[in-house]
Length: 343
Ligand SMILES: [Zn+2]
Image (cartoon, rainbow, N blue to C red; front, side, top):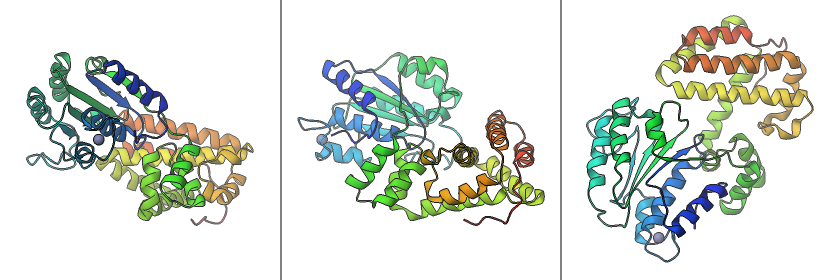
């Protein structure tokens, strides 16, 4: 049984292709983090190598080995490549050496299964040389070899590589579907399931992880509490926060952008509350607190600040000076002159 939740269009496409024997030799899965791209890729590898009649059975030797990343014919290549002893961890890109090794492996017949499957996790991090090297392989596909590229966005992947793959977009999963999965199949209590299904913003993998890892949720709530506190900070405190965020950005860009995304979600919730749409906010567990904050800020200011935050994110992606961008954003943030809010 396919393990992917909330992607019926993509699953039925694969089922049709498998029935007709018309599978492409390379796919590009695009979608936000934790939406199910890796689950789908691993599932597809299991379907192609399952030893039972109704693949993927999840129980045969092959399905199990693939699930544990121990199958000789299924390889995952990414920034954190466990097989890569020579390169340092936390690399900034997927290098050409990784792709050369992959090419060599792809040229050999399957060792124990029917299909060789290469999953490139984070294809947006392929270096230019690595992407060009991969392109050659994609242009001259081998028999019984499948490439699955997975990416959050395709902006930095060369068009030549994209055009050699069948592109499939994975959409955020509905909160209802996530809530049902957490309650019915993972034994999570109704209230927690409801909160997580909203907080994950359609990225089911996050909800599943947070349902068993309390630290993940605590960390999220801490970040969120601080963001709400900032509204009541004076400028000195706001600049301190901006400096901290800018330092983090220079080390881990994606984490900082994720913080700003979370920020936009919070302010969007304030906007929804302000316009009487409290029923569809994301942060339902702190609805009352958001209600209080919304009372002290005008609708116009909230709208304006969401736009400013989106602009700041664009500027950061375009390599503007992070400290400057974030300090300006702090100045743009509406003030709420009331007692400090605690999370
Ligand atoms: Zn199986």
